[in-house]
Amino acid sequence: MTDGRSNLVSTLPMKKLKQMILRDGVALNDHVLLVDSFLNHQIDISLMTEIGREFAKIFADVGATRIATVESSGIAPAFATAEAMGLPLVVMKKQVSTILTEDLIQIPVMSYTKGGTYLLTVKRKFIDKHDRVLFIDDFLAVGEAALGAAKLIETAGAAVAGIGIVIEKAFQHGKKRLQEAGYAVISLAAISHMGENVIEFEGDL
Ligand code: G4P
Image 1 (cartoon, rainbow, N blue to C red):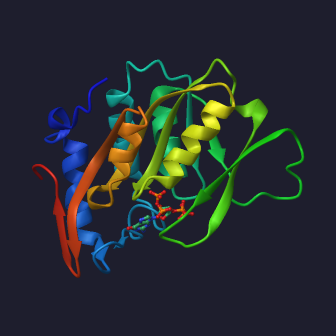
Image 2: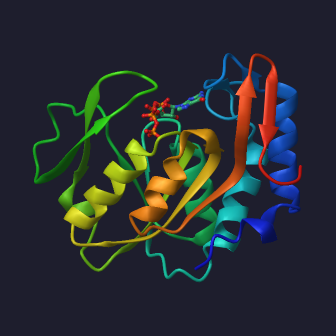
């Protein structure tokens, strides 16, 4: 599968997403974008449904058997994608409760945005070794979460079918790291530059 972004630039869902980022997103500084009015705190259901359909179109031919994401903000776009593709969804945990006692797979992940390391966790029985897992997340920064998720999927014996990101902060190079590791990564909106009240995208609006 190729990157494919050039084919995607003019699609309506992406245009709508970018317009919402410009209209309702708040660039706090040169690396943090607030999108909590429509993407990860209050959620625009119509936009999220379109995001799911868009990922379903993009990844139609990768042979995915399961969708995966990381709690919590990845759940909405991953749910919408799973619904659009008719596939099961597994949510990788960052906070492991004491009732999670079964056979677990755990990978340490460093979060630069939030600071500190967490143990990305999934029950082994929720990822089958025959699965081809499509990983969906809301943000891609330096790529630690996606790399950790991919490692977890592969530790389960399964394959990564692709990585779909709603908003990529292209200036933080997570995509390059993931591609160098051999993964097919598509983002719906790639931000090339941010500053206080400035948001610029790669490609057309
Ligand atoms: P990485 O995975 O690419 O390495 O990124 P990093 O660890 O730095 O950040 C991951 C977390 O920070 C994710 O949330 C992601 O959604 C969030 N994040 C990264 N950049 C931004 C941003 O510019 N704006 C917003 N609003 N969030 C950002 P998380 O730790 O998975 O937590 P949750 O919010 O999903 O629970």
